[in-house]
Length: 63
Image (tube, rainbow, N blue to C red):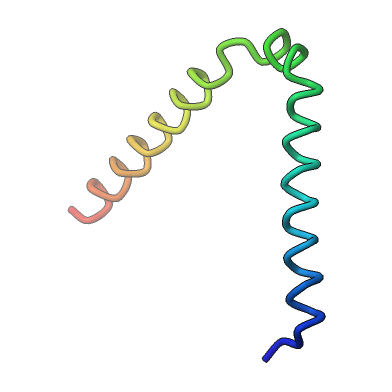
């Protein structure tokens, strides 16, 4: 299915991508804490609210 060279390239690519993403996140962690304070709570609240509304629409549309 894949050649040995393709698998080696994919492995190096994945490892390099993960390393670069971790490095980038750690570099910006101070600005994330400053600009995205309480973002997890807000996103979680809106996701739960969307699920509740979606469920209510499904329940009331069946009857």
